[in-house]
Structures are given as structure tokens and as C-alpha cells.
Length: 159
Image (cartoon, rainbow, N blue to C red; front, side):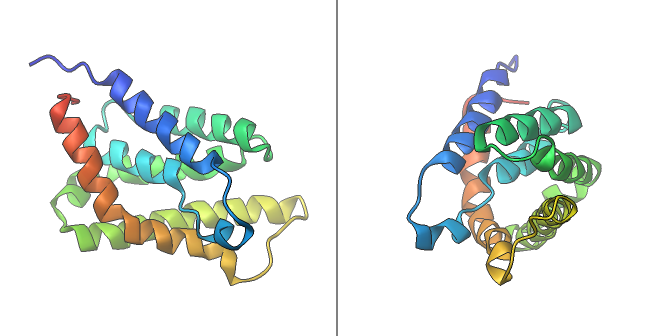
């Protein structure tokens, strides 16, 4: 069957960006997972020939514009994450979900670290350990995100 999944990939990125924009109460803001990075990791592993560093850069720039952050702040981390996921996609695919979750945690922490560095360069480094919580929340959500996106990919024959 011919693959018609370009719009599915774009729709999943759009849904992730919308999830990141939903207002949350003050107490819940620090646990918001990095939805767009999780979706980027999935598509970089599942369809590395379609989603890579270019998608990561564009997604990061769009997220920077939508959230009003420094232009390129999110793009920098996403580029590194997409590169790593693309390079290791064959290995990551064969791991059980709990091992994938550990690798996803490392990639999310790398993204957070690069954003932390960027914020530090401009003098706005976050205080406290709450800054790192979204990476751990993303790790816990990865198995469900993987299963949902895999089922969508199979249903719409995205290759």
C-alpha cells in the first residue's frame, strides 16, 4: 500500500504543540511533559526517512514562536534529540518499552539540559529541581504515547 501519512505526522505534531499550550494551574505547570519532543522522538524512530533534523528545527522554531521563548531555544535541543533518535532508531525499535523509556528519559534530559544552558547564557536559569520533572513525566508517559502513535501509524499506513 502507498503511504499517505504526511498529514498524520503533521497532525500529531500539531496536537503536541496544542497540548503544550493548554493552560494549567500553577501547581501543575512544572509536571507538563515535553509533548512535542516525545512526538518527535516517536516519529524519528518509527519513520526516520521522513522525520529528522529538519522537522526538529521547524518544530522547535514553531514552539519558540508559540511560547514566546528565545528563538532557537527549543530548536537546539530538538535537533540533537532528533539526530540521536535517527542514528539509533534500529536499536531503539527492538528494545522493550521499559528500556525505550530509559533512553527517552536520557533524550528528554538532553533537551532540558540544552534549554537550561541557553537560559543560563541569557541570565534566566531556572531555580530548583522542578525544572527537571517534565523529563521524568515524559519517561512515564512514553509507553502509552508509543502505543497510541504506533496504532495510528499502522491504521493510516504511515511509513
